[in-house]
Length: 93
Image 1: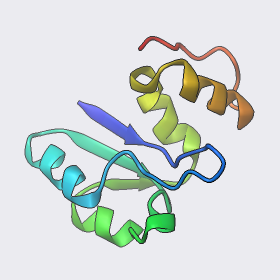
Image 2 (image 1 turned 90 degrees about the vertical axis):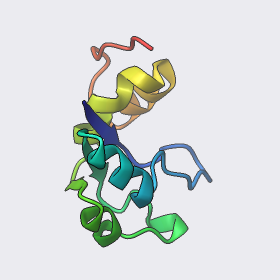
Image 3 (image 1 turned 180 degrees about the horizontal axis):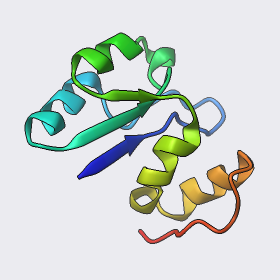
Image 4 (image 1 turned 30 degrees about the vertical axis):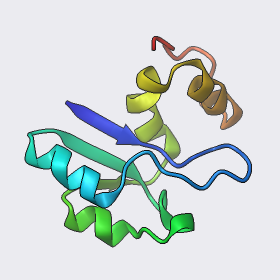
């Protein structure tokens, strides 16, 4: 399974949906993980930590969000629209 991890988009929200150790575990179990560049920076997690865990770092929030939006449903889809990526994304949860 391909798992995308976008940066949090809410005001004053600093979490990220997956830590490097979580990424390592998923990858060890055969999944591919993509993390938005600097997604964990606000809580002290670096791109290098994710890369060492085997995750791919992606530049645009759209790359990770387009993969992950189905799991997070309508809330993320609204955020995607705010970032100008368009209202026509599927929002199944």
